[in-house]
Image 1 (cartoon, rainbow, N blue to C red):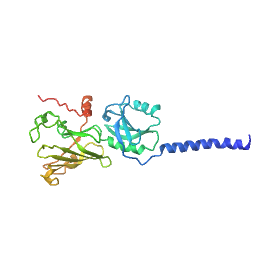
Image 2: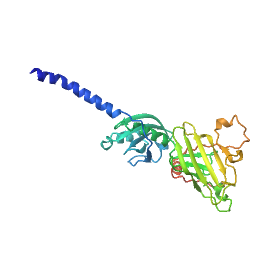
Image 3: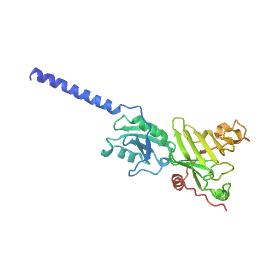
Image 4: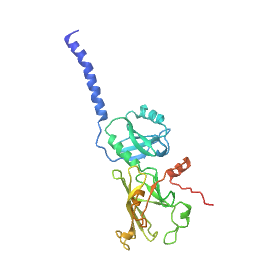
Length: 285
């Protein structure tokens, strides 16, 4: 063997190892992350809601376009995660407990969008969540279909006789407008307009809700309920605060406040109602 051939034989493995190492580093290089859209992905064996999922896979499919895939069985999630068609796709698998994402389990594809995926995961915390007062589903309960779509439900039978101030029927659902959600501070903002009528003497409600770290309850914030040009938005009479159960233990129980906690379905039927926002309350006898 010539000296040149011997040198090439010795160096080639080193070059191969270095190339593989650099390739792996490039694959796991993580960018700073951007705000992305988040939609439900379509795949076989996914379940309808994160509440029934053991793991959730979030992907980026196109710049700033994230999708989530909830799986009830980890084996199904692993099979999809490792499928040939997904190998080029940037994706992270998260453990899921009681509808909330927990630790990261696996990573795949190029690492550049990983922080974008993590941002999307924080937003997912509000998807398919329902918050109630005193377990009363459909009595001004809050239904979050996503971080951009939510409504107040008045579908409980008790609300059937409620009406707007002009005598017209109260709608079963009232959507939030001008919606925003800050995942870092866990703050949701949305407006409800009752124009051209009013409800409980107010034309406009401006909601600001701050959730706890597990999105189990609304711990602070307020509702400004007023009529523009007639009542003062910032006057104490027009501000109704949100409070957590723990905070209320050390406060005046007689003061007006709102206390909402997350409603957790106890059956598959209730889970289906949670997903589509319907409320079915047995008629009292």
